Image (tube, rainbow, N blue to C red):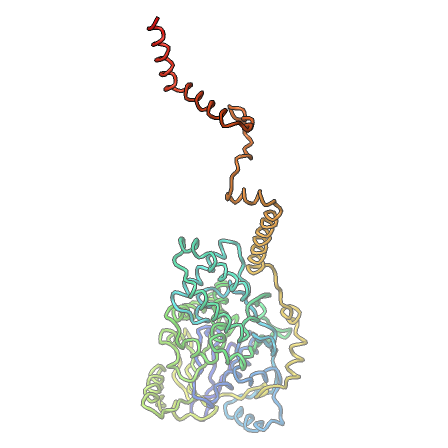
Length: 516
């Protein structure tokens, strides 16, 4: 089949070839099965098939095994003869060993090119999920993002967000009047969560230069699709960071890529290993967002394939969007396991030749029960399929080989150095310094005043001698020292000038004139 990915052989004697059609590869898919049943090999051969058809791939390497995609398999490998026999059984006539173009990525920048994004691009919803915030704390985080946008404070890295939260706590009275109550305790709780995240190494994830999605969707000179491998063995120590990053990447693809409808082949295929981590304890708003992305990103030309142990790990609304399915063995040791097995079997289109539930329980390592979309997107009947052998090396390459591939990549110069341009941290630090300098200058100016001026300025004493305006009455000359008799005479004269004095004078004069 020219326009498809060869998965393996099904039917009697495994002679019926099973193809995953490229024109329906963006209808998403599921790879499920218990531990040790061959999910990783299935992921590897699908990545090879897509890359061979010129389709870029992004996958996470949880166990460190998938780096072997960069190197051809070898005839010296212990499974060379079993692989050759299997290829003959399923009619894989042109089976050869070959490597594929691989780019290594790492959130911590140790096993691949650094992967970064900004705090603003991640957004408050995903960061709240990442920090496991309560509803009240998430509300404060939303306020921080809103105020930062209004104040022109770019949120690029963790120290920007930390500085913004400090500013919010210091100005909570004025901000609360507009956006609602901001509790200092909640701000402190968010800061503590950010500190834990920083200690887990997430400080390297937030920053610039941010990941350019076009660097994930490249082909090489021979037209092979690039396989992007995210080193996730260390990242699994912070499962919430792992799940949040992959969800952010899906969201960015959904928002940035143009609508293409139903293309002949996808522009990118995305494998989400350990998919249950995305939904464990996830709030409904987040699950709804994943469902929306899974439903709509198909029209952007992106296929999403969830890899997990049990289909029951995926919410029903999302599981219903997954048209291409490869189901490895499920173990039924408990009543819950048997129920999950029965429910998984019921989701497949029945094949009268086999019992689906029995087949899922009995398929061996390297086998799977498959149902792949056919013409017009109709689910194919379930088939017991022998998965084709990989063409690339099974197992990891050496650290030296990985280092050589990373060093030879043209993306190293673009992402190696961290860019720290002016953002919220620098702007708020400058404002704080300016305010501190102004306060220090005011204090220095006050110290230069003499003691009398400081007291006068502080309003503690007023002598009356500093009035500079003119008055109607000229200032009186200071009095000279007088004798006691002179003082008595002055008092008598004041009294005589007053009303009572005038009455006395009139009485005396009246009496004198009457006597005449």
